[in-house]
Image 1 (cartoon, rainbow, N blue to C red):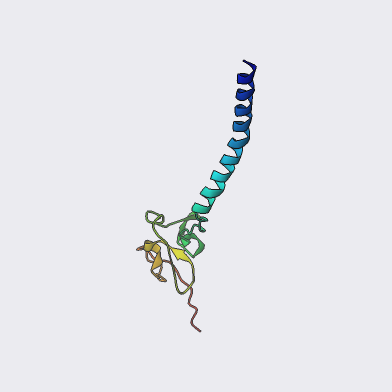
Image 2 (cartoon, rainbow, N blue to C red):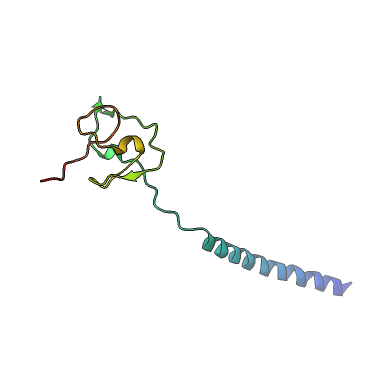
Length: 102
């Protein structure tokens, strides 16, 4: 009877030591498999000059969650709706891009 209690105590102690080590190794292994998250790009339309009514921007944000791409002139990221250059202030999408030409 005493031998059984000793065996149970040894098994319980071994499990309590091995379990955190096993969890640590699984955590490290999973961290190696998961790549580092890249910096999330967002539509930078509000960082450009936009038409405002009563202080509120007058923009269409329906497509701002789509894949962003960079404007070659101003180097800001925009959704497909705001990517095109629209310096005349028309409400049909695009962004006001500063002229970098001398």
